[in-house]
Length: 168
Image 1 (cartoon, rainbow, N blue to C red):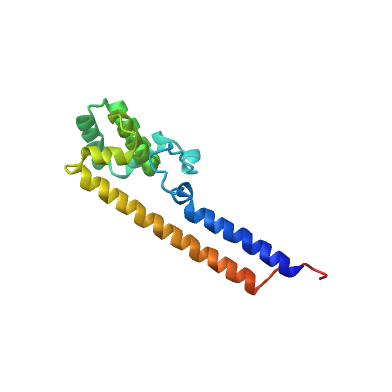
Image 2 (cartoon, rainbow, N blue to C red):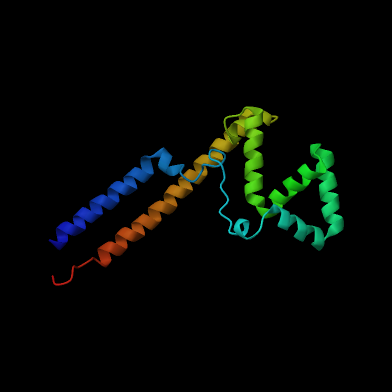
């Protein structure tokens, strides 16, 4: 009975490993940048908003604050209210702000994703495409190797320390 449970567990683990190794979507699961909108999960957003973040920054360094707002107004051709709103969004969630800005730029350019945009804007599109493909393949392989090592460790652990139900 214990031997049968071990072989069943081993077969299930082997099937999961095989699926991970041959499934491209499984390997690309963590490379979904630019394909789904970023949702900020920051608890900071619940404590105070962009107006409060702006006021804190303004009191902390008034000269830098003014320079930043004026720079935004000049480079992005925004009104003061728009520049302050944009800077407040950045202060509250810099990562989310950058991701949303990149996604807007991709959409504005009519590109499918960041790869297409990078290739189109490159001086040497073919070399850029090759570098991106090489980078993705190398990291996909690394990810599969890492998952395989952890999977093998889990199998080894379950073989060396089998589960024995109480009372058996």
